[in-house]
Length: 147
Image (cartoon, rainbow, N blue to C red; front, side, top):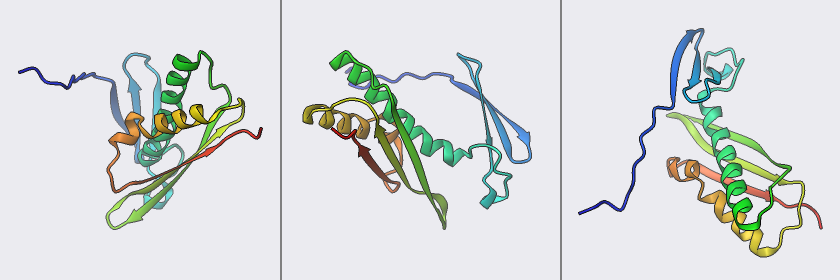
């Protein structure tokens, strides 16, 4: 009986510990690199994004990417000027992300109700949002341009 799920396994990156609580991530297909650092409040130097910072930023980046893909496909226009501000709250016992707030700013465009509804749905259904542990509170605020 065929499965209704399709799984795509991809080797995407290599991570090297570089000392001083820092890592270098090398993306295989582009060869671009990202450096992470332990945060100041957890013995690090805070020189770069921490792994939990990257998790929080991944949520906002994924939302923007999915909304842009679907909006362009459905409405044949780009979401130029869309940006996000990310807030992360950590808890101590156990140390983990307790909440991520994504403030989305739509600086351009005159979005009707249907478009706004679609954008909200697409953001909430992005792969990162669906992959995060259900105990991580996700707060998403949509800041539409003034008409």
